[in-house]
Amino acid sequence: MQTIYSFKGGESDSFDKEQKFLLHSLDNIYNLYLLLISLLIEVQKRSEDHLDKSSKKHLATKEEKNPNKKLINNEVLLMLKNNVLLQDELEQRHINNWELDSEYVDIIFREILASDLYEQYMQTKTTSFSEDRDFVVDVFTDIIAPNNKLYDYLEDKNLTWIDDLPVVNTAILKLLRKVKQQSLSIHFLPKLYKDIEDKEYAVELFKKTLLNQSKITEIIKDKTQNWDADRIATLDTVLLKMAICEIQKFPSIPVKVTINEYLEIAKEYSTPKSSIFINGILDKLIKEYQESDTLNKTGRGLM
Image (cartoon, one colour):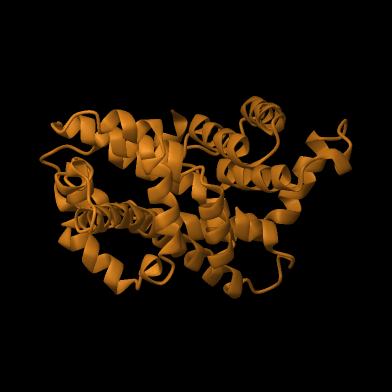
């Protein structure tokens, strides 16, 4: 979507550069995922360091000498910290931001210590895996994901990460909520693509949308004659181009799947009314295809 949005050429132009950018951007999504997951590991390490320094203070209190170690022993955080496969992936991709920019770990850690979540979690010294998991989910949801300073940091490091952040945050929360005590190390190493076909689909959608953009643009103009062109969000036009291309050029993808996918994207990235607008245009177009028997769907796409 972002690559098509930024493409300024025509159908006769070479878009090898943009295709490389597309694949690079997709790969960078995984780097962002690893970066945020590694932040949880650094929070656990920061907690260990905090307790160690507190216990060694000259005038340490009784509580500081015998601290509640519930946070540093959080099973989910330890599962991440001791995940050898995850550590290998972090090293291979050179994800070491928090060593260089440790102040952001401190910001998150201080917010955790000051939160009601932490106070409630630390009321007892005993715990269970489900309680540990729920605490990490809540910390990520309420403290890490909405943190403005972290947002600014990510934007400064990689501008495309800001567009990817909602997707990555959602993916992390899904993995955290589904993790079990017996989960394998690979649980926190999801595949960027389900398979090679998934990667090929991303490239093909990009290519076919650009190669057919003149025809698709005319279709959109025809279906939006009663709309002021200046009031149609540019992103909505991009989403319509991609959706129409998928409907026309990908016969195995069911129409309902296409519509639902682009409505969700519109809700996430575009204006409040975009999903209603896009749904209306696609619904009108599909009815015309069905009436003229030109809806090109086969196999699974007929569902």
